[in-house]
Image (cartoon, rainbow, N blue to C red; front, side, top):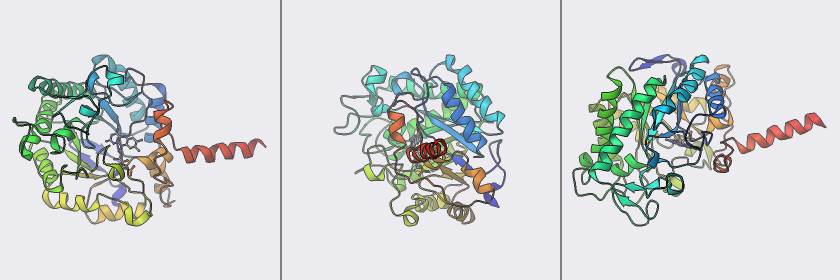
Length: 374
Ligand SMILES: Cc1cc2nc3c(=O)[nH]c(=O)nc-3n(C[C@H](O)[C@H](O)[C@H](O)COP(=O)(O)O)c2cc1C
């Protein structure tokens, strides 16, 4: 069965084709450090059988932080804590990559103490006030991604993933809705892609050729005047030319409303695997391993995606919040679909500072406990 076939991405051996897509857990320390709660969460995912875990987006510079209790990778002091995380996952036979990010216009001034910056000042988009990045800011960010990748490799991560999706800094540069620059970082897609190409090259300078470097990108922004599929394909090609080892394909931004990256699945089947058509276009154009995310909930759908060679890897986020052991359950022969309702209620506990969990599952567990007690 293809879903359980071993594979390699630039030397990283994966036991199966399932990926836990990057998910902000809201479990890190106030300075972005790892915590026992976060390490336990990663360990449980590895124990549950997913082939590759991608951490939450981790901020590469303190002024790029988006969320409270978000993981950080902005200083060498974080390496020992991150090492504890990778050690726990490896102890379970799992693999783990870290997602590197800068929030750009969506960095949170209440957390960073700074006015956010991005490619351009754009009314109504991003946090207000915000400012346009100078070439020095851009160099600072490119170097920060490189250093963060070096720290990640030292901390034992099996790969790094550049977050170039969902409307954060790199995605803002790629998007004509956010990027109004007239210098070499703005204009056509080649210029708008310059920062992601520079980030990729700088990461390579620090980690060398034999280390898996991936990127998560949008197929479309679903914003008026945002990145479209044609330009997204050109970004994918450029990433390949600059040495990326795999692409995770997503879409939407945190301000794309109902077309945000984590869509509520209202009517089940017809809405599942919602970037499948875009993935077909990618596979036709770009010869790189493709990791498909977005609304995949059932084993047969995952299998059909691999069989049709639409993607090589199946990535999920919300199903693992409800069932960290989903992959082992499927492997045991219980092929019932994920019980995730895609209601996005899992964000609330993370925002409240408790760390993400499935609210429905907790309600059911509490009920079971009560029934046992009385
Ligand atoms: C609570 C939560 C946090 C998320 N955090 C991230 C993140 O840190 N980085 C990222 O690229 N995507 C993030 N996402 C988006 C997911 O990785 C994924 O692209 C999206 O949820 C669609 O996949 P799904 O339908 O399997 O949940 C998050 C989604 C959720 C629900």
